[in-house]
Image (cartoon, rainbow, N blue to C red; front, side, top):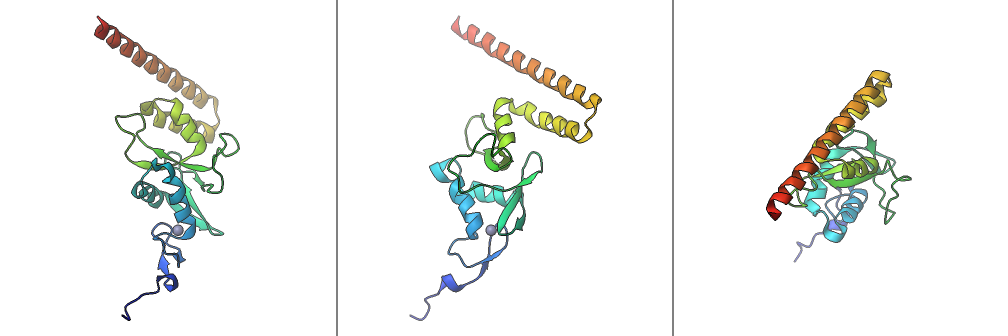
Length: 178
Ligand SMILES: [Zn+2]
């Protein structure tokens, strides 16, 4: 009878940012809000989002948890107050992303990713994406002509590969039709 606990008074560590909190949830209010938003419409499971956030957590500034973009390492935060984020205005806001999108299923590892990177990733074949980002990052860091040629060459190569892939798809479809 006396075993009734008062969890609302207990302080515990957030499983993501490790800040002390007294929420009834596993994570603190700020982290829980991100999980809540990420799992809305069942696009991602709670477990997937939790894992992605834990992997990417960086630090907390004035109560706002910051995470690192999985592809660029750039630190940013989520915007949980907006229903939809703008591709331009919120380019540097963090989003969630299925790492291997476009493969057999939509399930798999979830990563924290800058909105702008997420948009680019949607437009570029996955096998080229990481190379593209790496080359782009190198170019932005060094800002020299050699690198801009490197970016151009890499992009050319990427689009050649893409075109070849499309061609092969077309060929195999034509074979099936016969
Ligand atoms: Zn937290």
